[in-house]
Amino acid sequence: MTIALAGAILGFLRFNFNPATIFLGDSGSLLIGFLLSALALYGAQKAPTIVAVAIPIVSFGLPILETVLSIVRRLISGRPVFTADREHIHHKLLQHGMTHRQVVIVLYAVSACFAMLSLFLLWPTGSSLGLVLAVLGIGIWIGVQHLGYLEFGELARVAQRTFNRPQIFVNNLAIRRATEELKVARDYDQVRRMLLAAFGSNDFDGFALNVVLHDGEIVAMEALDTVPARRTNHSLHWNKPGRASMDNSSAWTIALDLLSSANRQRGTLTVYRLYSTRDLQLDVNLLTGAFPTALADALDRTLAHSANVIPLPGQDAPLVTAQAG
Image (cartoon, rainbow, N blue to C red; front, top):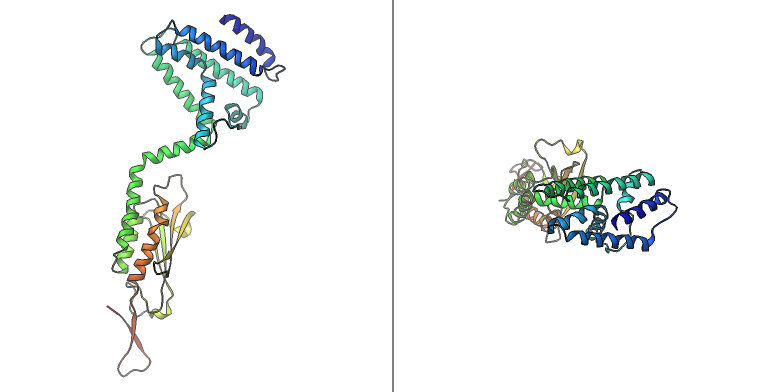
């Protein structure tokens, strides 16, 4: 029966090769699938269970692989499993620049390789099954990588982030810790050191803090001969050691608007990251959530030092500034 089926299919393939003049249709393909399944079940009665299951799976490796890939792809992308698309294996090969005839030959060759591997299981030994499965797994992995499915690329990226989870914990905790510490900061120098500690160990390469100064405010570290009424802002720039200056490098930025709980504008915090292939090991939501408000409140609290203008005895015009304690 197997020989008769093979002879009928070989006679058909002569006219089905590209450019094809006849096609199977549903009735022909379903009949062949039924016969192959029946023959596999019949042969399974004469072999150990694991080998009996492995032989038909390896023999029909290409259609099984195509079905599994289609189901997994659609589940990952959130589409219905039975939705049609143009991302099957033969479609991907065509997108790689192959002709229809070349695609057919490649698929014939892959099917032949699966069939040859299944032949090694007809006389199983202690290591033959493991060797066949290892070769099969490596071949499938390499083949799927070359097909370039976006869904599996995203799956690999998520897996990589899972492996890097300890570093993500460290970076996220640094931002969370800075958010809590900013709530009790007593002076501007503490705020500055908290920002340096928060961003010094994560995957950003620098930041620029632009603080809006209101009337009568000074920055604690600046010289006292600066007249605060003439200043409207203060800037703090920081680059990670070993990184080029952000002004001379290609980088992407996130600008955080610093609005305090009292609805008072305190400027912006812009964080920089150089373009690179390394993943960002940080939950950006931590930066856009409570952190900007905590920083704005800290600036509101620590910079609200009024500058008292005191006339000197015996002088009319000259003035000096003194920082209120």
